[in-house]
Length: 204
Length: 93
Image (cartoon, rainbow over all chains, first blue to last red):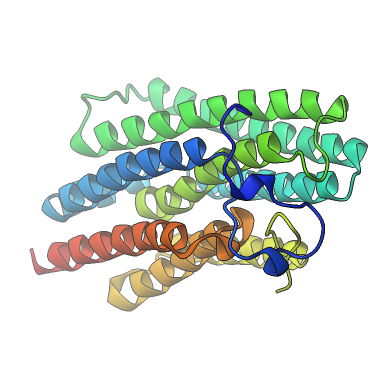
C-alpha cells in the first residue's frame, strides 16, 4: 500500500493542514479504488430503491421481519470503528505509536463485533429458509449486505496489517501514507453502510 | 473545526457523539414506524448528514483538492436523490 505516493503526501509533516493547501490523505490509487467501489454500491442502492418502488407491499412486509436492532447496533459498531481509526491517525501524527496501535486494536475489535452481529443475523435468516431466490427483497437484502460484509472482512485485514505496523512504530509524521490509505478504505466501508442501513432496514 | 496535518478535525469526539445520536434517532424513527414523505425526508436528511461527516471529516476530504471533494459529495447527493425519486415514484404507484 505504500508503493504509490501522491505529491501531496510528500509534503512537510508539521503544522496545520491549512498552511499547506489542499491535500488528499493516502495513496492516489486507493482513491480511484474507492470511487469504483462507491459507483458499484451506488448502482446497487438505486436498483434496490427502484425495485422497491414497483413492489411496495412485498418490500414493506419482508423489511418488517428484519432485525432493525441488529442493523442499528452494526451502525454504531462501524461508526465507532471509524472514530477509532481517526484517533489512530491522529495518534500517529502526534508520534504516539503505542496509542495508535491501541486505537487500531479498538477498531479491529468493533469491526469483529460487526461480523458477529451480521453472522447472527444471517443465521436467523437461513433458519427461516431465506435465500437469494426467496423474493426480490431477499435477493437484494442478502446480496447487498453480503457484498458489504466482504468489504468489512477486507477492511479488517487492512486494519490488522496497520495495527501490526503501528506496533512496530512504522507510522509517524512524514510517514503516514500507509496508515492514511488504509483509513480511507475503512471509512468508505462505514460510509456505504450509513446508506445501506436506512435504505434497507428503516425506510418503508 | 480546526484540522491537523492529516485533515481530521480536533473535535472528532464531538462529531462521533453526534453521529451516534443521529443513528439512535434513525433507529427510533424506524421502530416507531415513522413513514410518509416527511418522515422519509427527515431520515434521508439525517443519513445524508452522517455520510457527509464521514466524507469531509473522517476521510479528511474537507482539506482535499476540490475535484475529489466534489466527486465524493456528488456521489452521496446523487445516491440520495435517486433514492428519493424512487420513493416518490413508489408513492405514486
